[in-house]
Length: 205
Image (cartoon, rainbow, N blue to C red):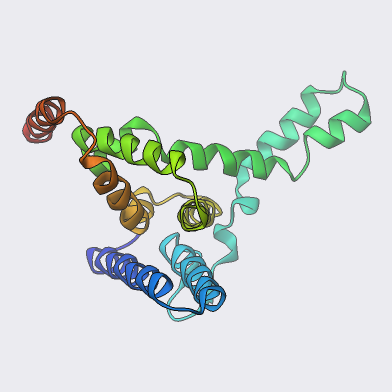
């Protein structure tokens, strides 16, 4: 969907977000900076997913609620669940099924395959270490990081077609943070072995 130039633009959006995080950490106006970050991330994520074309043209036909496959799935489930009471059937198989699909797509973003392609196998090790360390030392700043990750992921899966590359470009500041956070806690021999293995896999035909 995007050209190489647009992919580079998404990367600059991610770099811009790093600047906003620094602004949040250094300013006294925390609430205002959080609002700016949320609005910025929402717009950039919708642009990266193709739901907004420059300058501000919304593409509603790309929303997941307009996805023919999902709507067909809901209708099929309603037909095949006729043995259930109507109230239960209407609660389970209605428009809220789009939410189930979105949550499934969000989980699908963070598969081992996607993480490997974005980080290499070696960097998944310190990534997990960094996440573990932050969970042990939880505070408000960590809540903001998790919220931003969820906001980007949710904004990307609202589209019928999830752009994996652009998603991880926007998530790259967080991924890099967690990798660097856990780098000092990893076993250096294991990390070096994984790094060599990653290079071999990446360069193999």
